[in-house]
Structure formats: C-alpha cells, structure tokens
Length: 255
Image (cartoon, rainbow, N blue to C red; front, side, top):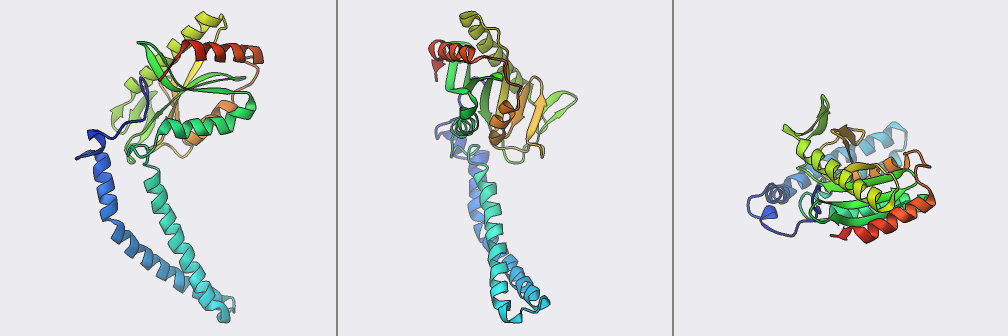
C-alpha cells in the first residue's frame, strides 16, 4: 500500500472486534449451515443423475450416475465457499499480498526481459512493494485489500471504495511513482516515466478486473504481469534496463 508494505503483524487490527475478526467468527459459526445446504444440493444432484441415466436408457448405470452427479455438486459447492474464504486471506492478515503479487510478476515477466525489485523506498519520501523495469518501461506496483463487499469503481473520473473517495490512496501512489522517476532520471540521465499500479487482493472489481482512475490502475494481482506485457516494447534498451536496475538496487533502500 502507498507509503508502506501490505504485510501487517498480528495486532489489534485483526483481533477483538475488527471486521476481520467478525468475518472469521461468522464463517466458523456458519459451517454447519453450509454442510446442511451441501447435503441438500448433493441430494438434488443424486436425483438429477438418476434421471439423466433413465432419460438415456442407461437404467443399469443409474446408481453410478446418481453418485457422480451428487459428488460433482457437493464438490463444486465446497470449492465455491472455500475459494470465497481464501480470496479474503490478505485482508484477514493470513497471507502477504506482496508475496503473492511478486510471484505473479516473476512468473509472467522474467522471460520477457523484465527485472522485479521488491520492497524499495526513498528515505523520507515514499516506499513501494515492487519496482518493475523492462522493455516496455518502468512500473511501481503496490498491494492493498478491502473488505469483500467493498465495490471499487470509477465515477466521473473519481476513484471510489464503496461510498468513500479513493483520492488519497491514488495520490499517494502517484506521488511515489513520481519520486522514484525523479531519482532514476537524476542518477542515470535516462528519461523515464513510471506507471503506478495497485494490486487489489480483496474487494469488488468489475468483471474485467481492472479500474483506471485518478492516474493509477487498480487490478487483480494475476493481471499485473499481463498488463505490463501488453505495453509496447522498445521503450528501453537492454543496456538502459541494466543501468536502471543497478541504480535502483543501489540508490533505493530495502524495506
């Protein structure tokens, strides 16, 4: 997140009466209801499987079809609820967003000539989770998460998180990108413009998974590498990439 890492140690934010604490409490308490609902859905699948077997004159295999359909329905229902809970892991403090995004960036960009530096800062000015340098240019990527029901959208050019303005978040990341670009320009003499990206680990993004607003792009972590690869190449030469990477590694503090 702008100005710091998304990783938060276990403290009062994730204990007591925080939204994260209540979310996990209700999730655990609802386990029995989810199982009951799954049994009902599996029963419907059982009947549907038998009906399909009879419909296609496979009566002898109706028990097999019934069990198969019941298993598929129950498994699908379990996976749906597991995935919904797993998607909140960063917001709940159970996983580190920068680790997830860093893995996506390296897997997607390493063979395309891009370098990824994690956890970099300019003393007293700004810090970011990832600095990406490659043929298409330079990007800063930060990580953030909101509650699962927070809608992230752009209206009339303004960024919103639910009913709240997101201008402060956007401004912090834009200023961080400008500060990093100024330092690299000064130290290398290579004119670069840095594009700010914010990987969203929890919250409601549009179906496209991307929102452009107030100078930044918010997107799902798995889309960060894809978006960077889509940029037109040839902006930076191999030599310039090497110089910028070495300079960033030398001049920027690790956080």
